[in-house]
Every structure is written in C-alpha cells, then in structure tokens.
Amino acid sequence: MYSTNQIDASNFVHGVDLAFKIILGISIFFLISITLAMIYFIIRYNRKRNPKATQIEGSTKLEILWTVIPTILVMVMFYYGWAGWKPMTKPPKNSMGIKAIARMWSFRFEYPDGRITDTLYVPQDQAIKLQLEALDVIHSLYIPAFRVKEDMVPGKNKYMWFIPQRPGDYSLFCAEYCGVNHSYMTTAVRVLTRKEFDQWYAEKPKAVITDADGRVIPGAKGLEIIKKNACNACHSSDGSKLIGPSYLGSYGKMKTVITDGKEREVMMDDAYIRKSIYEPNADVVKGFASGLMVSYKDQISEEELKEIILYIKSINE
Ligand SMILES: [Cu+2]
Image (cartoon, rainbow, N blue to C red; front, side):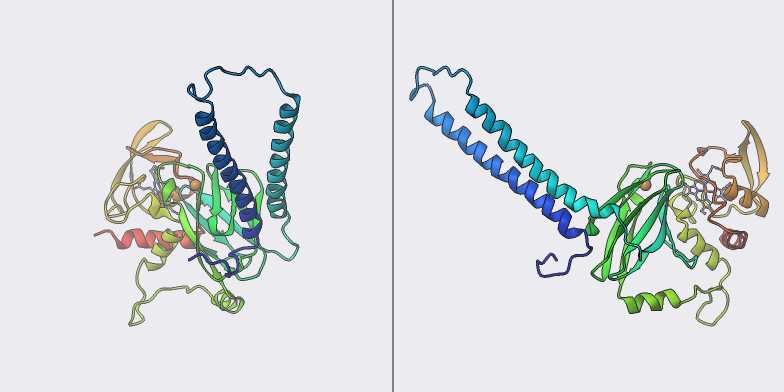
C-alpha cells in the first residue's frame, strides 16, 4: 500500500513524481477553470440575456497575457521534468555493474562473479548500474516502482542506474512490443538488505540437483538451465506446440528440416540439438519460422548444453 511516510522504492521516485504531480496539478487547474468559464459564458451570453453579439477585434493585452502565462507554465513543467531526469544520466562511480540481457521473450542478469539469474537481485542502498543489451529486437526495461525505463537496442551500448531504497519485490517487465509473447516478458527485482544480499551472493550455485534421498535427478540441471534462459517461452515439455517444437518425445526421432531452402530428414541426436541451439537457423524445423530463435552461442556453454540434452532425453517417454 502507498503511504506517504514510507521510504521511496528508489532514489528517482521523488523527482519523477514531483514533475508528474506539478503537470497533473496545472492540468486539473485549467480543466476546472476553463470548464467553469465556459459554463459561465454559456449562461451569461445566451441569446435571451445577450441578444446582440458584441464584436471584439484584437486585444494586445490579452494576446500578450495568453502567450506569456502558458510559456511560463510550460517552462515550469520543463524545469521539473529536467530536474527529475538529469540525475538518471549520471551513475555514481561506486555503482555495482550488472548486465541485463533481453531476448524474445525473457530477461537475464549477469553479475560480476559470472552468476546468472532471471530475477534481478540487488542490495538495498547500493547504486546499481544495469548495462543493457538486446540480442534480437528492441526491448525496453521498465521498473515502474523505481520510475526507470530505458530502451534496449541491439548493437547499442545503453545503461540505466538507480539506488533501490526499500527491500521487497517489484515488477520488472518489457515495455516495448517485441513479438507475440511480449506479454510474457515479465520478471521481478528483489531488493535485499545488504546482509541478505551478501549471503545470497556468497552461496555457490549447486553443481548437481538431488532428490530427498540424495540421488541425482537426471535432467534436473538441464531443466534449470532451460528455465534460466526462458527457452520454455517457446518450447513446451508437454507436447504442446508453442512458437517452437515441444521437447516431449523428440529425442531420437526423425525430423523434417529445411536446410538452405531444401527439405531433408535428420535424426534428433546430440549433434542436432547442439546445432539447433548454437546455429538455430541452419536447419529450420518444417512448419516453424526461422529467425525467431537466435543463437545461444554466448549464453550456453558446452557443459550446459550437455545438461539440456540430458533433460530432453529424460522426457522422452
Ligand atoms: Cu521485449
């Protein structure tokens, strides 16, 4: 719930809200005064009360008045807008750098120690500088509670920064229509206290995933990698056709693919999966669009690839 004595969620809330309130205030003032003036004129100068219209030709005084007053008002709006925006362009030197990578249709975040998450974890009261990268089309990273939004443009170095000031979860989503599943591009920022964050950051991600009895679950790691990279935005594990083919029961099957414009049959084996992930547009599965899946060469290591293959094999029933 919003309450005025709460700390702002980020350092930009005050400036942005102030500009917003001033513009809203001016707008409401004019909405009311113009409406009232109109109503007054309708009554005061209707045909009964004022049968003969007065012709007025020009008034320098009025002309000056309605040029000067709006100019001042617009300058006031500009000043507060500028004052709220300017600090957003200057990240402090002690900012913590995190890479934010967008692709159809997910975000991922890379921390200085190389760890990757799909939720953005940040410590309270620490300036965070997000290096913004887009791998396919234009996306936009928006955190409404922090009052920050910035386009992510392929091939362009862009950034945003902020200081999260209040622990909690806040929504983070894409604000630039980027294809059919644009609306799935949502995740969260989790603001932790410094202590919680340090604890989280010190934990090493587990190398293997085990069940309650300590047995390694085959494919569990692969599923985690698939989720982390949001492959499931386009591929289901239950046989349903999304943007791409389902993983269910696909391993070892013959696939019809289009290679350089020619149809051919290939077996879905390790090499084919590897190629599908590193060069997705070399063999395009018949019935699916090429160019939608972009290469994961820089995001998925050979090790992770093996885990993904294990997972696809594990759901082959
Ligand atoms: Cu997007």
